[in-house]
Structure formats: structure tokens, C-alpha cells
Length: 430
Image (cartoon, rainbow, N blue to C red; front, side, top):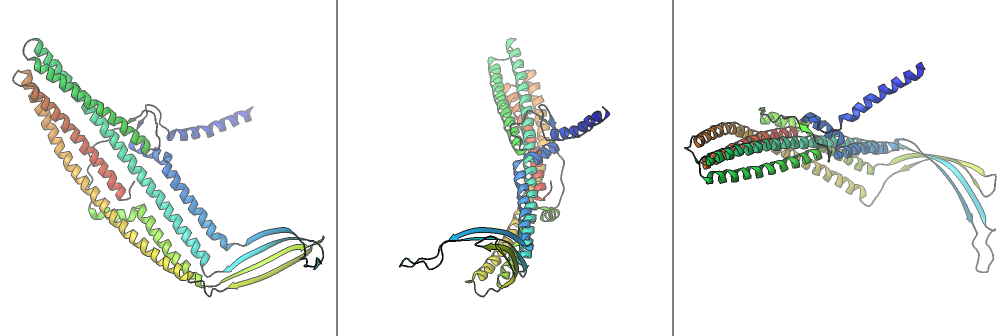
């Protein structure tokens, strides 16, 4: 009985961690997610990452394929052949009747020395595998960037929806006030009609804002690799946190950390190794072989064996090697140009991200002032209307100006976060 209880306890201890691990990459209805959690889910679920991972494993297998020439090749061969001698035109046989021939042997072939062909293939396969690993990191970076952009997109639409809801509530309050003034004869019917039209327009803006939220959530779900995810909430971190970094430091980090640049540099080195491989086409190869087997037309079969070696010296191959060397040299030039081109694109991305960051920071500071001014203008317009001095057009303009100011501030904050994400991606940071 004690053994059974102990076994049950051990099974529970093993199953509980597995279930916990399974829940980490799932989204439950009503769950609250932050940016880090969204990124972790994407890095577990996104199919692009799975494809890149298996590409790396393909590279591992190609290294093993290249190394196979280091090892002996052992084969077993068996066969049966039935033959009949040729018959002359006179009908006379030139030999005996049909003959049965049986054979079976085990053969071994070993590459002894190939002047660096095999080692060059192994180095090229290793460099290509390392390049695939950098491609995997590049896919990770792009997935992280997509999640960040989509996450900030959802936060932006949520904030704009909140502003639209506030606008509807403010226009509803103004309509109630206009109706009250009209009922006691202090304001004309025009004020009520104008307030009703403004409220309808505000509700229309709210409908558009709600649709924008739905679309933004779909984009985030797709970025996480979880289309059709249940409803969840996000932790709001759409706040202003200024980033100060010089162009020189950003470029230095980008040239050092960008996985796509490192991948291309590795492929350039593989092209240089391929040139060395092409040059070995001028060199001889030395191989050894051995076989042992049985054969004959009658049982018991006779046995036999052979041991030998061969030296293959290329003399003329129709200019094949020369053209392979020429192609390898041109490939090096192609990769060198692509590396330089990518460095220029990296610099462009870094400069654009820094410029967008500075522009968004300036807009945030200006938008904060505009929101405060719009708040004061709204209070003045509503006060004038309540005291009977103002008119409904002033109130409408003030409310719309306040809504536009808040939306501009939200857009500036979201653009700043987006520019930060672009800069981090351009610098090779996750």
C-alpha cells in the first residue's frame, strides 16, 4: 500500500509542472496580459519561428552529410544472372547451354586524401548553419517588433475609444442642459436640435473607435500566432519615457547586434570557403577499396577478395573547374555588395527611428499644452452657455477641440512607443 501511495505522489509531482507549463502559453478568457507576456506567447506559438527553427536543424543535418566523406562506405551487393550463349546463323551453338551465375560481396571504400574537399564542404555547411541560426534570431526580432507594434496599436485604440466615450457623455450632458433651458423658455429649439446632431456624431465616432479596437485586437492575436484568442485585457503602459541615445552609439549597437547582418556576413564567408572548394577541382584524389564475396554458377560458390587503391588526377574537364572558380569569385563580390547594402539600410532604419522618436517627443510636449488649453476653453464655453451668454456653437467647437487634442496626444504617445520599438529592432535589441 505504501508503495502505491508513493507512486501516486510521484505521478502528481510530475504532472503538476507539466500542466503549469502548458498554461503559460495559453490565453484564458478575461486574462490580463502585459507586453512581456504577449511577446512570450508569440515566441512559443508563432509558426514563422517554428519554420526558422527547423531550418537550423536542416543545417545541422547538412553538416553531417558533409562529414560522411570522412567515414568508410560499406555496401553489400548480391545478384543472380542467367545467360545463354550466342547462336550462329547455321543454328549451331557457340558454347554450352544457359548458365546461372550467382554472386554476393561486401565492399568497402575509403577516401584517403582529397586535398581539402571534404573539410571545405564541412566548413561551408557549418557557416550556412550558423547563418540559419542568425536568421532564426532575426525572425525572433521581427516577431517581437510585430507584437510591440500591435500591442501599442491596441492601447492606442482603447484610449481613443475612452475619449470617444467621454465625448458622448459630454455631448449628452450638453443635450440635457439644452433641453432644460428650452423647457423653461431660456433657449430656442435650435439649441436642442444642434445638441442632438452633435450627440449623434459623437456616437458615430464611438462606433468607429469600437471597430478600430476590434481590428487592433485581431492584429495583436495574429502577431502572437494565436488567431481566434478569447477576450482578454491589456495592462496600460502607454506612458511617456524619454529615450536618449546618440546616432553613433545606436549605429555601433546595430552593426554589432543585428542578426540579419551577421547572417549575411556568415554567408559571405561561406562563399569564400566555396572558392577554396572550387580550386580543389584541380587536385587529385586518393581512395582505397576492398571487397570480399562469393560467386559462381554452381554451389558451393567460390570465394574471392580484392584490395586496391586509386589515384585520380584531373587533366582536362572541359573548363569546368575554371568556370566554377569564376562563379565562386563572383558570388563573393555579390555577398560583399549585399553586406554593404544592408549596412546602408541599417543606418537608414536607425536614423529614421531616431528622427521619428524626436518628432513624437516634441508632439507629446505640444499635445499636453493643447489638451490643457482645450480643457480651459471647454470650461469657459460651458460656463458662458450656462450663464446665458454663450451659444451652442461655442460649446460644440470647444468639445470637439478637446476631443481632437486628446486624440492627438494619444497618437503622439503611441507613435513614440512605436518609434522606440523600431529603434530597438534597428539596433538588434529585443
